[in-house]
Image 1 (cartoon, rainbow, N blue to C red):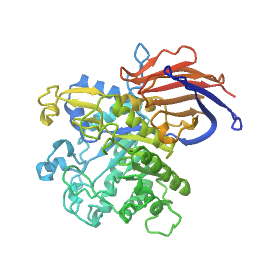
Image 2: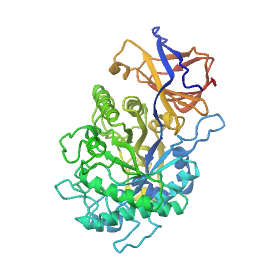
Image 3: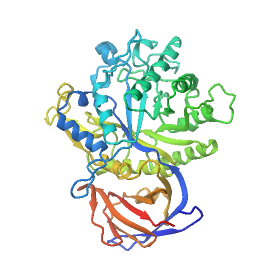
Image 4: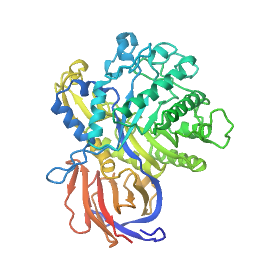
Length: 522
């Protein structure tokens, strides 16, 4: 395709209740970020499921997460995740109750012990899912740590009890910690799984003072020191792994202090113009020029969802940086779905999250979007696949669920699939402007559209979210693009292949569709 060719095509939305025409202008040459992938993490829950559950059940769970195949009717068997996040645990499982973490499902094993001996049979359940991800053809692998091994920590715990915001790691063990992380990368490379990314810090703005899970705070100086060590060791070991930082707990910490002066304003501190700052790391070979942040507490009300991402985008542009949304589930209270408490397998949560994905991709130009945890046993909106005992009187029995249980796919799983199954790594987001007399706030309660292209294969993908209560019809008039298939996630369908009659496509109320097509070679 010639780069200097400009054209757009028109999409028309009409409601059967009241005639409405919505023009969508898609400029194939107005390009934004290149997509790196969509992912989820194995944190905590995968350890027991992968290790103990019946083979048939965990095989089906893996299929739902990773498969790119279709069934006989043409419906996707899974959501085809392109990034799998592997959690490097800190050793609280070996400590048992002495870890202080009462919930066994939130403890994790360590590959290394205090004498420096490695045991690569640890985290067996997580390794089962890791291997399945590879077998299914997942394109990218990310390893992440949220606390140093407990025997190197200041308090010998996987959680923190210091009050100065510093990394819970004794100064003399920074080098050991970096060596451990690089040894992890090198081992799995020898085993045939090369980790594309390493995220060594997670939500450093929180103090992690409650013994509910592993975690540690970190100042920007702590992060800079650790990243410099990792960069040197990754280079010496001839690894291709890219370091991703800082997994900010709230997007506002990326571009402002936000009441954490030593742990906020991270874009400026790590990548800003003052390159003589002690925290500057923008020149490191192994560090991707991308900042990662979590969308928690920035999604409600809708005007905040929009404004925060616009502010973030301005800071990213100023410093010529990419952006990853690297962790999200429902935490904050909101009028649409109430909040994180009480699981929801239906379209309410699915649409709410789809809107967040759309905002991160189109307002902040996220190159990657990643959900928090693939599996959950909690009565909470934090999983793609929900596990329970099947017994209404004891749904979330932690002991029995270690060995078996029932699993349920959610509409959220399939809504993420509207993006992850079709918007492939290497695709470029292109403009999809709605010709509407509406503010962004109003659009985010109505229709949202984003578009992506592959310049090599000439594939085109359009994702449309109908947040409203009104049915619509999408009519494609442009003859320069051939539309092939439509996949719908709605109350009664899970990313189902939808009959496409001509160039008119129905969008049900409260639903999401993905349209695949081909751009004529110019």
